[in-house]
Image (cartoon, rainbow, N blue to C red; front, side, top):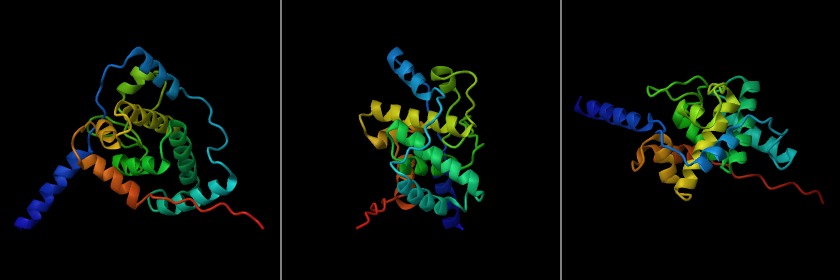
Length: 202
């Protein structure tokens, strides 16, 4: 009984650590302008992959891993293409972004946290007022991922590439290990990907 209670308490502590949110911080005008430009809703190109072989390999592998959480294949492939594009556009590893989404929302499009964070990447609504436009819908697939990737890249820039601290800022738990460790574990254990070598005919 005592062991069961201890385990339940540990689960509550871990849950509280993960269920954080970005904190409002004033931005320099130049940073605000740059982030506004980054989240502006421009039409994406046809693909963010180097070639069709890379696209097929990555989408096939990631689709298989995500199928249990997103049973609809069409929605799953649209989601994965958008993750790859928005992560690449922001200069992030798509595998890291998938790990973050797993921890933040469990791949639930309409997830809302107790703090009010929204969507796949659990973006706080104050970002819309700060760097976006009032018409921006954080439950829209590409909009949510664009905001989330832009915010994470902003925090990485602030922390000079220190992922541990950047993830802490993203979750509003700077200096604590639970959230960065959870994202890294999801990234490395569930979403690690080694590209297949390009086929070169003789």
